[in-house]
Image 1 (tube, rainbow, N blue to C red):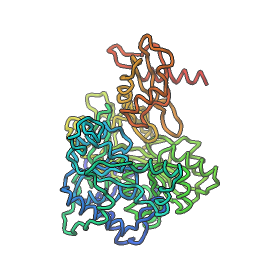
Image 2: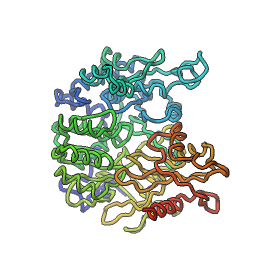
Image 3: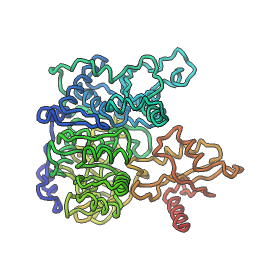
Image 4: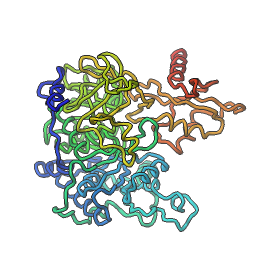
Length: 586
């Protein structure tokens, strides 16, 4: 199919007026976004962190000092720089600093277990890590005494250069001073943000960036096809894979997203940046789209409704990208405190469908629109969205974005390119400038995901009706909770090591605005005392090896595990049985 024929397909009947069919695919690097914003909006506030601010000019200068520091730390173009921290100004500075140098930003969940972080670091081989103080322990060599081992001679940093980030350093002076008050609340807050001590050799990111020389302007810029970011995704099996997103991928997706919401005013918006930057949705919309629009980003280190509303009253938000549970909690908090949300003209909801009642209440409270979208890490992440206007269809995955081709095919056919008729379920294939460059150092996984012609197999079952895409089923048995993917196999592996557990199946149950609830169905070993395997005990055991968001929130003890003739656990049957039992109890 030729480019002109593809372009004709982009002109879908339900696009809003003035939405382009094709977007420009920039060849320039992501750093150009920040340089342009600083040139035209240098005095505008770029980042607001709990009331402390950085202008676009200051952000550019800090990122160039960060680039200079990384260069002197031995980082070269193409090297990986691992980032392990919550949303904070230092995170944005580190991203743009590494990108300016031509390095690859490797994002990590700062709340993930140490075992997971160490496996990811070993996989991509970063020799420089920038971690918040509470996360430094996650990258230490477990054999070393600092890492909890017995080898006093082992290097706790495992030969890496490790910079620590003090979140308090980015806070307003009054809040920093309050952390040292001799009261329980101050001690608790300080303990949640700072480490009691750090191993010898860990360097202060905040101090060294402030003293560093800016990278010389003549330093070569990265190219559009160079890898910019590694984002970790478990795929269908839960095994760690790192999706390679290029400068072109991310710039194209930023252009696609901005084109979808043309009502946003350059230099006039305030984004609420709650989604974590290690999540593709948060990274693209906040770190790149917001900067491209020269918007002010109001960020918090964690999601707190009271802090969100306090920040909104100080600096009213106009645009918010989040997951359903965030919309609902902000709405309920505003209703309870009598806080107006009328400045929030536009919202984008992703990762899970918005409950219709919550969506209607949100629009009544804001007087604006929200739209829903679909994407995945491998597509930078956005593929489709519902129109920002009356032609939208709530609950749909939406219309393919500009410059994006989709097919709905029979996944089991010998020819996976054979499309199914409209209205019938099939696997979604995607092609566009936002489709990733493959998985880091994993050609087999890349080959399994990509078809000839640049088509990405999403693994998601959808149906197409009147150009709109709707989720039909999740071919992969992932659980969506709070905007995160939970891989049943990982959770099952963690629970199976617990005494008293003979068998386990992990499924998702309906959970309202927060997405699905992680449910563990367990068969006990014969003779296990009553009360030994409880939900609390299972969570405490599993928390040692899996992230907090993946922990079960519901437990069912079953007598026998449904299995297929070849011994495979029938999770669908397990889920149906539990849902039936819950419904009957209700």
